[in-house]
Image 1 (cartoon, one colour):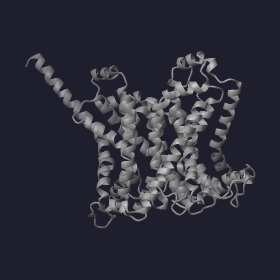
Image 2 (cartoon, each protein chain N blue to C red; image 1 turned 60 degrees about the vertical axis):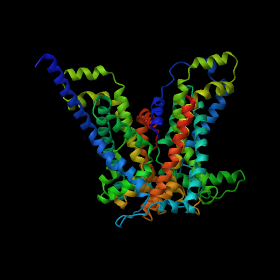
Image 3 (tube, chains in turn cyan, orange; image 1 turned 135 degrees about the vertical axis):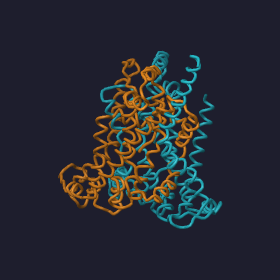
Image 4 (cartoon, rainbow over the protein chains, first blue to last red; image 1 turned 135 degrees about the horizontal axis):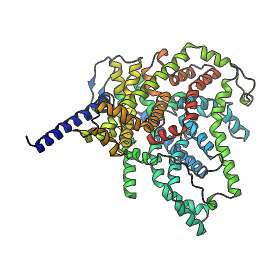
Length: 298
Length: 297
C-alpha cells in the first residue's frame, strides 16, 4: 500500500465516521419529529377525510367532512368572526407597536424602563390576561365605569354580541404590541443616523423624516409583523376559552375554538381535522402573500 | 410561520442599545419631550393597570368587589393567599407546571443542540432533506398536528401523565433551526483544532460545543421555559384530571367554576411571580428569545 492509498483510505473511514456521528446526533430529535410532527401532519390531513372517534371504528368518508364543513353555518360564522377579529387586531396592534417604538426609540432617562413595561404583557400568560380582563370588562368593572363616566352605554362588553369581539381585540392588542415594538425597535436602531441628519439639515420636519426615511426602512419589518400577527390572530384560543367560551350566542366563536369544541367536547376528530385543514390553508395563503410581496420588493 | 419569516426574525433579533450619543438636533425639543412623556405615561398606565388590578384585588377579602373602592390598595387581606397556598390543588398545579417547563427545557436544549451541531458541522447523507423538512414543519400550524398528536398520546396511555404532556413538545423545529444557525456562525478554526487533538465526538460536544453555545442556550432556554409555563391548549387536553392540571388550566377551571375573584387572582399572582422574577433578572434573554422565535407562549 502506498502512502497516498493509506491517506485516501483513512479519509474515507473518517468520512464514514463523520456521517455516522452526524446521523446519530440528529436521530433522537428526528424520532420525536416522526412521532409528533411529520406523522401527525400527514395524519391531520388524512383524518379530515375519515370518521374517527377514539375507541370506535374508523371509516373512510371521502369528502364528507369537507362537504359538512361547507354546509355548516357555524363554521362560516366562526371563519367570519376570526377574519373580523384579525382585521381589527392586526392593524391595531401594529399601530400601537409602531407608536410606542417611535416614542422609546431614542435613549433618554427612563426609556429602558418604558421598554420593559411595554414588553411585560408579552411574557404574561394569556390565561391570566383573560382572567383579569374578564373583570375589567364586566358590568360595573373599570371599563364600563369609564364608559359610563363619559356618558356612553355602560353594559358589559363581554355579554354584548357586537362588542365582544372588540373586547377580545383590545386584549390582543394589550398582549401583542410589546412584541411588535421590539421587532420595530431593532430595525429602527439599524437606520443609518446620517440619513436622518442629512434630511434634517435639508429642513425636513419630523413628519417628512418619518414618511420618507423611517417608514420605507421599516416596511419589510412591518410586513414580517403583519404575517406573524395575522397567523397568531387566526389561531386565537386561550382568551376566547377563558373570557367568553365562544359566547354570547356564539358571537365570539372562532376557528380554533370550534376545532377544540368538535374534537374534545364532541370527540368528532375527523370533522375537527377538517377545520384544522381550513386553518392550514388560511396560513398558507398568508405565507404566499408574504412571499409574493417580498419577492416584488427585492 | 414560515422559514422565511423566521430567518427575518433572526436578523431582527439582537436589540442593540443605542450607545452612540444621538445627534442633538434629532432629539425632540422641549414641547416634543413633554408630549412624549405624556403619551408614554398613558401607555404605561394602560399596560400596568391589569397587573395592578390583579395584585390589589387578590389582596381583598372574599366578598363583593365594588368600583372604584376596590381599586384602592387598602384594606389588605391575605385571606385569598392563605386559601390558595393552603390548597393542595394549587401546589400540585405549580409542581406540574414546574415539571412540564423544566424537563422540557432541559430536553429541548439537549436534543436541539445535538442536532443543530450535526446539521451545522457534519456531512451525512440526507442532511439537507432532513433539515428542510424540519423547517417546513414550522409552517404547519400547531393546531393541525394537535389532534393526531393527542390520538398518539391517548392510544399510548399518556393522557394524565407527565410523559404524555412533555414528549410531543420536544419536537421543536425552531430550537433546532436556531441552534444550527448559531453553531454555523462560529469560526471553523475552533472545531478544527479540537479535531486535530483527536477528541472523541461526545467529548467534543460536551467540552467544546456546549460552552461555546452558552448564549443561545440561555436565550432559547428562557424562551422554551416561558412557552411551557404559559402553555394552555396542550395541557388542557392531556392533563384532564384535576391533579394533572398546570397553573394555566387549573386557574382557567377555577375561573370557569366561578370561584371568588380574589382567590382566582391570588392564584394568578402565584403563577405570574416566577415569570416576573425571571424577567427582572434576565430581561435580555426574554426579549431576545421572543423576538428570535417570533411566537408568544
